[in-house]
Length: 398
Image (cartoon, rainbow, N blue to C red; front, side):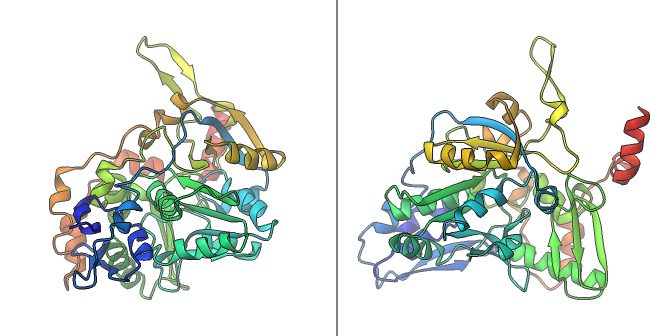
């Protein structure tokens, strides 16, 4: 068997194999846990091996050796407020659009299904803002990118490390007009699990959800607060207090391949890598118990981006947008201290063996209570519910 099925559970779900297959014998379908996986029609397969050759797991995409590390904030604070952290994706995207290019990233469709889409004007960039903690559907996207590049268009493609690597191995060549941005990723839950949870939240709020923001800054600034809305009612809470979000944060619901992710390290696959600069306001305690500051004076309640500039092309683009940013140089040790997935893949918990048992049954409410159940520390609950305005006052008094 010289096809993609030999990959088994190591498949990352990028869908590159479906798009590269010359016989169209590969389709991408949900597995028993709702993750998108390749299915091969063996009667049509000719064992050409193209799907294996262009697979980002079985073939290594080009990596960087030593990224330059920065903490950065977009000076357009309105735009940064709508972004997950410091808003760095937007000026990069605008730079590509200004050249007549196209930007690809993850957006929700009308049913809150996460899919990669193409954006060709600034007015639609908001669709790509904010994190979606679920795997995005990239079916057909790599072909679109290839066609645009063949037409001599500039393209920005953003996605998780495996999605960026999938595009690069699909194209199988360096493309001068392609800018890749990989998002530092913990892992991805099943799209089917998220769909069921969105439906569950809609029932609780009394109507179909119209929006779901995993990283709302409206009430408490830059943190892990979500906001779900159905047009009439909304619910906002700290991520660790929500069953789906908590399961994500504790690595319970990821795709099996995420626990052995080959992109969770220093050798990044994108021209630029973006993440939250978690812990920027803190002190680091090293082995000798000496306090070393991160960058506390650069902290911003609306978010700070961690930027890794990995290639010369990435540097060129970063230099072009510097005048729109506040920047300080940092280092990889500080960057990775509270971003563990810059060093190692997320650890697989024992409960992952059974976490998806019953997720697609008739009684999802019981599934939430039994499988996604969690305990909340009362002190943490009180602390996290303090509004941002109150925190500002307390900080001044302190």
